[in-house]
Image (cartoon, rainbow, N blue to C red; front, side, top):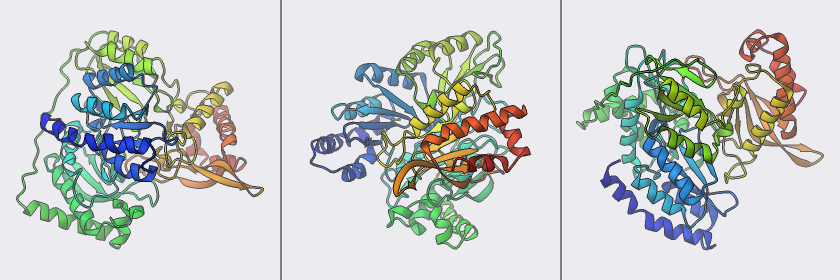
Length: 514
């Protein structure tokens, strides 16, 4: 971020301070404040007594300097809660009204943008977290994702934007960033080009993306971003907030084929405009020399660079301990080429480590999942989120505890996805098993529960939205998962193999708990 941009965004802060003071003094209601504060990447939490602040981390990339900034904020303002989000950002929570603007200004001084982190603006650009270091990737998409993030900042104050504009880049068919069902997605190909998808998304009216183009040269991606904006300006329903998302344009225009035609027409207009949107970012190859040998474990993985390793850090529910964050910042500050990468499943990867450095990082961040199931995904939950219906974090903690007590082996349960409401911030709709906050009437009274989804998939070419089974009472979900784990464990297979061999077994077992 340039000093000019930082100065520009700082000019917005006095109004934020003024309106924040008005909200916390009772002069401004929660709805009006939410509509205002989202532009700054901040929202009041559910109790109305504190705020959260979303730090944009383009492509999920957290440099040592930015990690040090987070650690400094923890110490300076005595922060108690941080969340790694499914959009690869870092959220700071429980910020008092007297400090939230100060943290925002400190972030700008550190080169971190919060502006546009909420509201009707382009969101954090997503990228496969191990791009550039992952064995088997088609190519390193990170430089292109970073350029897209910089370009999209120009649209923060553009007219007639969709309620959210989420852009993602994937480096392989694993499709961790859901590039094939984002508002705009760039899926890498073996030939070094991208297939481009558009008008997809999770949440209400979920839709898979429409393949707009194949074999697009990476230097042309900004043309597609500009065309996305023009397409929504022309055909998006920006007058109805409930339908102000790109995915509604598929039906509005008569179907995927008609949407594709409309998009490509706008693309032609961009190409004919003469605007120079070709980009040629520098590609930064990892030149660090590896040293030593480390055994591969659940938490240590080899990179494609010989002798270098990645440490996996998945704090439960994406909520790291404050002492771990500060210890990690201290541990890596003098390590060459080391950085942290955030993943869409709330995992953090510390990359470019020698064997000895990997051990030091493991010591700094012990608060990590010990099994695939413990890497399960949860949104921040109804205890904090204004629109949340159920406490997804509380449910995840209860499920992890139950599975540990039952002695379920690693692999017997999949990674599950929990959202507190239909917005799908926990990506429940494409998880192997997903839960979405809901209610169930019993004896005339609504009881807390979650709608259950099964058989969702995110892999490119196999994408599928999960099937709704019905509402399960919150208190029964840990029991259901332990029963499932035991059933799988008894067969000697892992969950994926068990589910392939017995495709109806999951639904039959779940029926006893619905």
